[in-house]
Amino acid sequence: MQCTECLLDQPLDQFYRDTRTTKIVYKKRCKSCGHKRYLIRYSKENQVKHICVVCKREFSVNVKYCPNQVFCSTKCAGEGKATLDYSKSYFNNIKSWIDGLLLSDIHIRPEGSFSWNVKHLEFAQFIADKLKCYDPYLKQQKNGMWSGRTRVHPDIKKVREEWYPQGKKIVPVNVAINKESLLAMYIGDGHLHKRTGRITIATLAFSEEENKKLANSITELGIPTRIIPASKNKQEQYYLYFNRPSAEILLNFLGMSPIKCYDYKFDMPDREVNREYQRRKRRERIEKREELGSKNN
Image (cartoon, rainbow, N blue to C red):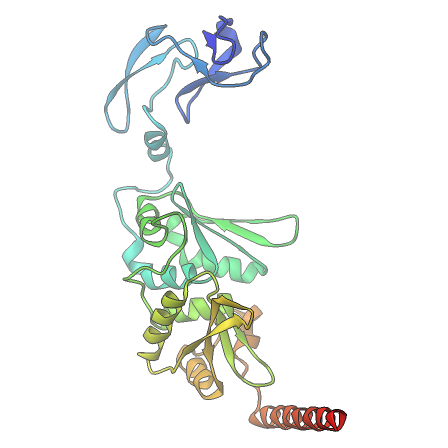
């Protein structure tokens, strides 16, 4: 074997075969130059032919480092060791939930698995229950947050191609907007303003055009929706916005909260509280104008 940096021959016992990448790598640093890098492998050194147990393709490996190799690639290794049936599709049965969760709190990792990181265990378990067919598992982080991840499956890789065409999340053309997806969106990123009764859903990761598309799709369900900028100084991020009447329609459409930790998002404040809040704001504006007028005079 040769080091890729100094090109000096090294003892074979300094290297091993990585079964995930099928490459020969250092056990330790090169004794000559100190670099810990991949090696130049002689193509015919200790090569023995094997048959991949997954794709049945013939391949060759160096038996000194990997005498019992049964997979020809990382893809076949993942499929061969998978706990899920790769020949079966689960996506169509839960598409609405997946679309709604992707619009809020879950992401798709490059290898083809769903992942999420949320504050409440109850919500983390709620997501895991909706994605049960992909064998999810949960873990508590050091900061108290709860993270979850599913197993890898070809279904999820196909979904990633639609939602992350250039590595950045977008809203695909065929996204489902219905009661289930809207409920998942609202639980994850919705906010009910306790004084005004208005609702916003934080869709900040999506463009203005994508937010308009979501707003139009929700309006078609009979729930008037518009978008508002996240701040006056930063116009490129937007919320979905529901005024008080639209918020009441939305909550009636969604029904009761499916998890207790977010019951407060479904508790519409009394109208009298809203009226008193509006009166107080009106008095403050009048007093401010009078104060500015007196200063100018």
